[in-house]
Image (cartoon, rainbow, N blue to C red; front, side, top):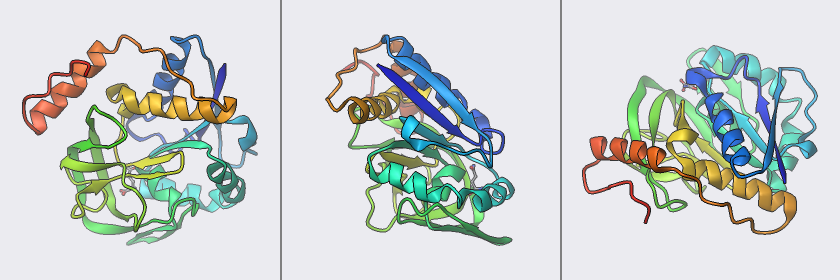
Length: 247
Ligand code: GLN
């Protein structure tokens, strides 16, 4: 088995080292004997989505998003076909906002890819916080860090999780992120996947199922350190009682 990851525009969208999430996906495949490769695309490159199994769209400043959004329109059609056909996407912060219809900022309108029916409006202040979520996709909590000026409104779409600590999509709804088909959009930055190995494996499983047409049971990995780190953050911000032990 083999997984090909497409990293969209790492030169512009790579705030807080979102690139580390690629390393995590690659390693978790390789440790299980699944071949993995990553193709990094620059703005203006032709992207053949039929050769990709997972797409990562990272975070960026408003200025970088503005630069990217003009070029993104050229790939929006084929990106949409990929998503509608069950293509796996992990979109983080600025990348999450770009999945939607638009991000309206005080200095202009950033047109989105319109892959998921959501939109973002710039708020008065930035939402900067550690953040902990409970998602019904996973038994472990999702932990991370958020730093965004935008408030994202997902309408009737399914959120990624309920906020246990932190701000989330818009600071008031109590929800964070979005799940649409095999797309996850989230404000959680930096080492999202190393801190949340179940989320990494969800992406790998969905990609293998789509590619090989069968449910693939991923062999468990020795994740005790990841679980301890996750539990530490949960306990620090939400409360004790969560040990990190496997259920
Ligand atoms: N520029 C966007 C915002 O401030 C996204 C920032 C980010 O990717 N951290 O809302």
